[in-house]
Length: 279
Image (cartoon, rainbow, N blue to C red; front, side, top):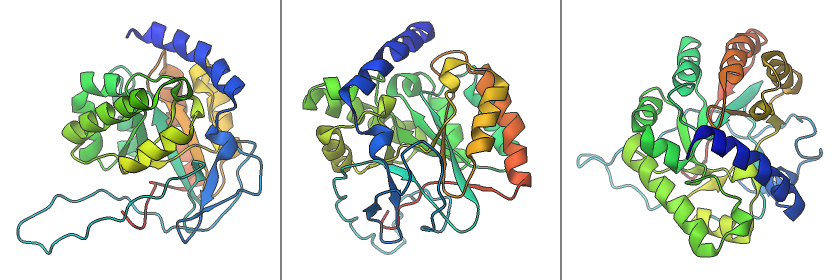
C-alpha cells in the first residue's frame, strides 16, 4: 500500500471510528498495582492525571536455554473490556509510543534520537510495514525497545468479522516474532477502535491492550511546534504519548522528538516501557 493512500484511508476511517463509538481512548483505564483495571478519574485523553503503580523496567522475554530452570507456563490473560490508558511508575515516568511503522525514511531517525539520549520507546507496528522492513524490527530489539502489534493493514476493526480480526493480529504477531525475536505482548487498535471480539482475540494471542493519554495529532502534520507543545503541555507522571513514525510525511515528528525529548529529561522525566508483572 502506498503511503499517500495509507494516509488518505486513515483520514476517512478516523471519522467512522468516532461514529461507531468505539471503545478506544474513551474506555481507557489505569493499570493498578494489582494488574486489574481501575477507571480513571479524568476524562480520557483530556489531560494526564498522576497515578502510582508499576515500577518501570525495560522488559524483554529471554530465550529458553537448556541449562536454565524450566519456565512456568504464563497465566491465561484476562479479557479486558477497556484498553489501558496510562502506566505509572515511581516518580515522573512517561511512555513514548510510535504507530504505523516502521518506515525507512523516518524510523531510523527516531531510533537515532532515542539512542542518543539512551531512551527506550514502544513501537506499534503494522504487519505490512514490518514485513518490508524487518531489519528495523531487529534494530529495535537490539536497542531494547518494545514492539507491539498494530494489525496487518491498519483497518477499522469494528467493521471486520472475527476471522478477519484474527488474521490481522496473527499475521502481524508472526512477522514480529520472526524479525524481533519475541512475540508481541501489547496491542493497539487502529483509530483506538476496540470491540469485544478484538479484546477476546488479543488476549488469546497473549497481548494486552494499550491506548494513550496524550495524542500529538502529528498525523495531521500540524507543525513541529504544535507537536512539541502537545507533548510538553501534556507531560505528567504515567502518561502515554502517541506519535507516528509512518503513514505519511513524518519529518515533523522526527524533528519534534529531537526538541522535546531532551527537555523532558532535563525536567526530570524518566521515559520507560510498559510492563506486565505476570509476563
